[in-house]
Amino acid sequence: MVQTIVGGANTLIGPLVGAAVWLWLRDNLQLIPGLSTLWKLVLGIAFIVLVVALRRGICGEIIHWWTERRTLSARQAAEAVTETIEAGRGAMEASSRKQRDTTLPLPSPATADSDIALEACALARHYGGLKAVDGVSFKVRAGTIHAVIGPNGAGKSTLFKMLLDEVSPTSGHVLVTHLHSYATPFIRYDLGDIATLEDHCPCGHDGPVLSNIHGRSKALLKHANGMVSTFYVRARELTAIAKFDEYRIRQVALDRIVVDIGGRDSLTPEETAAIVALIRRHAGDEFSVDVRAVATIDWGESVKRLGYRCELL
Image 1 (cartoon, rainbow, N blue to C red):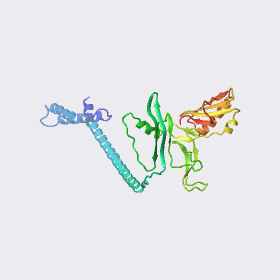
Image 2 (image 1 turned 90 degrees about the horizontal axis):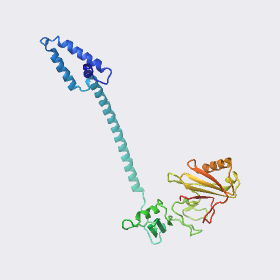
Image 3 (image 1 turned 30 degrees about the vertical axis):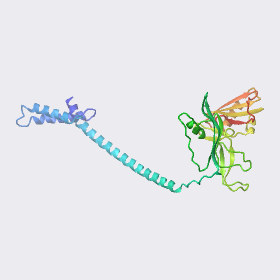
């Protein structure tokens, strides 16, 4: 026990070192003139000093010192790397900020005939009997600055969430564009529509134009990460798999698509598997596909019997 305390516990060599030190002191203290009767007292005092000064034992203190030194070196190296990265990041941010400050153009002064950049048309959002927003309409022209003022609970946050497409309105809609259709001027584009912006029109119109416009519910899929993508399945792709009178494809959840096959009492397992594979080839494997055979499809009040409709947009 004494040898272990002196040499250091939790080490293999500690008891050996402790035994060697203890035996050396015991044998050599007896050889010192004048300590022939006091050598045991001196040995006890030496034991107490070693225990107080080296609480972990001789080997334990050496191992502890070496571990602390390595940890300190690793910490200093990590701090140096962190300082280097932060210094480089700060320089990049400063450079980027300087570049943005010098390259951002000033907005053109707004005039009474400036293009309409944002238009809210009878926006309303109801939560049961609570009307958070009720029939708000306004137009914002490009280059103008506006503010919405009202007491707490007036619906300011709900209004802006509808403008940002974070909350769907109970009724009404938002129009966002500075472009007009010159062929049919009454056409405007809804927030969330996907289109291609071209520099000019082949018809000869000099200016930016929109092409390949996809309606929000007609040809778009909404994904779990918030992104939207185009989705289009040709009728002939389905008729090549099975015979039917009519069909309807709907996205009913972020991970679920329902396919109704009208005019069929049932589908064979092969037909069902082929339809599922077709939908996933166009939509992606992240969606589960439910294929249902029905005598007739309930179109509800829909005038246009669209082959696909997204019920989340």
